[in-house]
Image 1 (cartoon, rainbow, N blue to C red):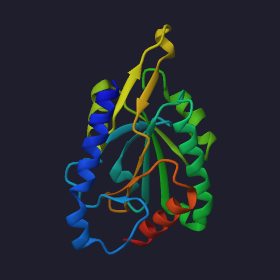
Image 2 (image 1 turned 45 degrees about the vertical axis):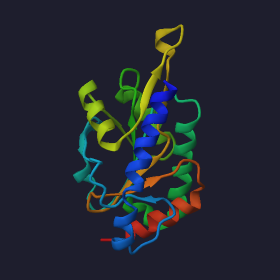
Image 3 (image 1 turned 60 degrees about the vertical axis):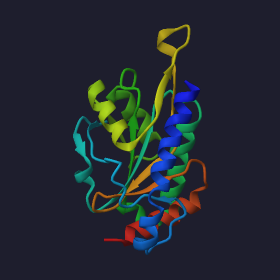
Length: 202
């Protein structure tokens, strides 16, 4: 399990490092987080059901900066920490928060029903959306597209498993292009500064 985790982290790191030469030629805005603009190894598109029961696509959020985080409602630490951080970021954004959408994609559709997501996700901020893959195939497709590592960690009770997963988030610009890999637990102000820059880019 640990070897697989290291392997996935290494693959993500390699993909990000390969962008260095591209960024040196094309990057005009400097970000605090990892700029992955133009990365062809990622596929940020998805077709997922939100906690209102509406099928959503990345294109639905055109005109807004979309921040995507993968987790699950029974996550004991990383997920609630990230969601609380995003709540603080939205406060720091002020009026620019109207141009940002935060989406929480569950890695645990077996337990995370739409009803549970509807209670959990907006409890951090009513503007946040919970998204759920309807099938295992849909989950695998979106996980592959974002290069997310996740793996169930079983316990004696089959229903009380945990999930190891990538802790970072992603930012997609107003035109639906993947722009940033957001580092976990970096502090609200740095992320708010990056999102303000993306909001200004048409």
